[in-house]
Length: 130
Image (cartoon, rainbow, N blue to C red; front, side, top):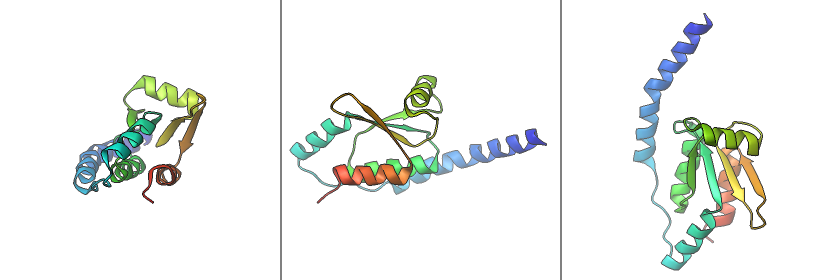
């Protein structure tokens, strides 16, 4: 019975994954307008960030849409398909849970921020328009 349930949900994921990805592409908002100097500063700050994610995770899609809205070029690391990223997430953050934003501070200290709403709040505090 467990095997049937497992294959049922795998089938559902196979059907829903393309729908979710197309939906993300069609509903991704336009980014905010910044001067080229301001955008260069934002891009420089984004170099210290990395988003660990799964492509079809609805919470990851939510964070990626907000990144697009804010015009952020944060590196995306697929923890589902890349074993190295999955291992880094496990060792650094303590668990394989996505989305997770890795924040590298100026002193070299890494902070691992889980929960999509917390990540979005952090991005708005740091990069949101005044």
